[in-house]
Length: 614
Image (cartoon, rainbow, N blue to C red; front, side, top):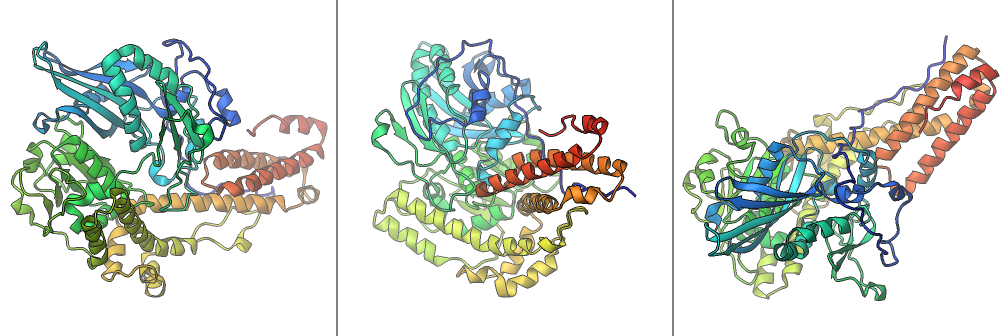
């Protein structure tokens, strides 16, 4: 009987989504630039293999200029780089989402962001490279797989020379990266220059971006753009939650113009201020993936509030759809507003009064007015019944019939109110609120982490000559039993129906996404342990007991195993300090396989030496 070789276990790792094919013929290659010494200027060896426009594509898909034509309406006037590809459906989405609704009355300059579905898959040699750099990113900062973000700088000023009487135009950055703070800061540099100097400065900006190092988590990056130098640090999944890895200024930073302490965090206190008496209930609604709509007076307030909601359950990733700015022209308008089925698990940000009627059947509606200054005292508002919401002009508040599972935390409300009275800086208020949400989410998720860790088979059950053992299934009743002694009461002072909250959460998209990711990580861990067990075996001694046919069969299976393990390692969430160990294990197994091959006749050696491992 032939030896049974190791078989692969677990979910297939998703292929990284491809970006557009890059064509370097449209714009002349960028001149080389010398970055200041330090972590931001150091490149990894893989980056030396990048082609022209690969670096640009690691940050942005493209840059669009959207204008208003009296005959055509909103239209994409320019796309940079010129070789960038957008489908007609994607262009249509960008056109309508890049302008505020007419009722918003946004005069001057306005910044906001939107999110829309990617129309189709695009192939690129960058896919595997980007997946590798994405590996160490926190869950909330990983690249979008099926959506793009649009970061908008909209200008509307009076101009009597135009028939419409107004100059209206948007500069839009299209990206897969959720770096909202970074891209808004970038637009503040690029947009005023563009509105003054027009297209030549866009070409210069694209060339600048194509000289940037790739956005690799953990690195401090120095990014020159149009005569300004930005310094940022990309967070990693290994950063201690709740800490801000501030970029420290140094004497060598004399050329740095802007230092960004965060690339993605919005001001939670400012965003939640209109409804901050209900922040705990809103946290529950987001955690459970409930259908939420934010009705705001402008796209800026709409998008900021939606992003604040999504981030309030960090470090847990929000796994449902969310649209920071949503219009009646959106391609998903009918899908999301139909009354023939229950509202989907999605958070929408809207400004058009039409939605007050169209979405009146939604279970949870947040109505915000103009965001007050931090020094002004917010009035306590009761939760209102949905029937009271008739128009977008209704009073600010939360309209829902939802009854929270947990008792209200009066301490955080008093702490924030005291901060307002004492004129505590907005940054400090924001830090207090962010810490509160973080501790609340961690108290909720720790019991789940503890139970899921118990599903891992014991290491002694792993045999090198059998498939890695299966993870034990997640059984809801068993998990609930653990909460009595090891539940959130160990780390949270809040009382209430925690059991009911968990029961509801286990049916939500957020649990499904979280558990899929944890199961994939644990499966990869089992694969690594199985490899280590194989490496401890004396393969040469073992094959002496078997025929040449059986030995060849084993070698082929081991080579397949080695190849699969190399690919899996590139995409795994392995701890950084474990990577050298894993690579050492693979090298050791490769050496064992080579020793077995060399023990075979030369004709078989020639067959088995055909390359199959990366």
